Image (cartoon, rainbow, N blue to C red; front, side):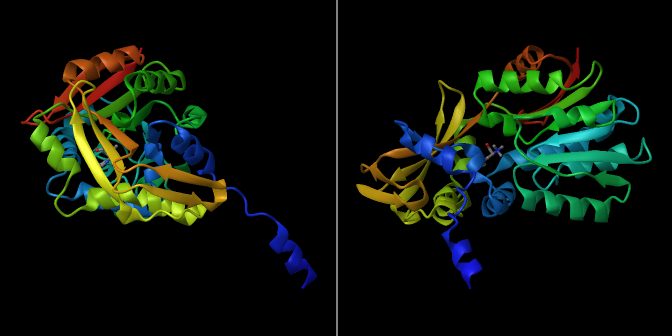
Length: 322
Ligand code: AVJ
């Protein structure tokens, strides 16, 4: 009994998201890092987004990878290992791995993601479907990429799914430089980015009629409630997403529908919102092919080839470390 009493007095460890949440919500305007969107529930909602009729990026990129799998693989080195940044459930990656296995007997595959749950799914499904793929999952963000050096060369790094769209241009360049720094000359990067297009197409993709993107966005508040003892009323915020032409990005926000105060116990803070005040939760930058190839160059890669779909809605580019 005494031991139990003592245990209860140990303060709950501060959740790893506490710092990011406090920092972002203390800013004017308020913001939250998009990486906070991907807890288990958020990753599951994103999986649903990828299957929405309005959300073209996933199926367009999958189409590019399917159509050009053989050509892509023929441009890769011999007996490569594959690492993937932000692998999620690695659904599209299977297209490439399947094609790669026609050229080499087995593949070591190293998926990195912030979501442990997504990686477990990826591992289970991949190892069931493709026996010759050895999956080595790694939970984490992209801050420390040293582990890439330990992967057997020659290496292919996958950064597909337009995840790079979350980053500011300068951050995107330094991420690529950071990747290149941990690679050797001749190692390759396959980068998938979403392209600038008709704003109606973009708007529909981020404002789907089933409201899944809205739930995905609001899940941030649900997560803060659960992990930080927040008292957000998710329905007192609305999902707002629009095309910012000048910045060439889709923006996601949560907009307070009324004047309100929200207590967050673990942060020992009460947040105040005026009616119409927004929390900026995500940017999704859209590129032109020219900007994409320029980005790769600045990041330390020579562009070998860029593939796109018939609408020019999405692009996949292969770069090699100089
Ligand atoms: C995972 C960053 C590529 O920007 O389209 C989808 C995230 N947000 N719908 C994107 C997202 C709302 C997605 N990325």
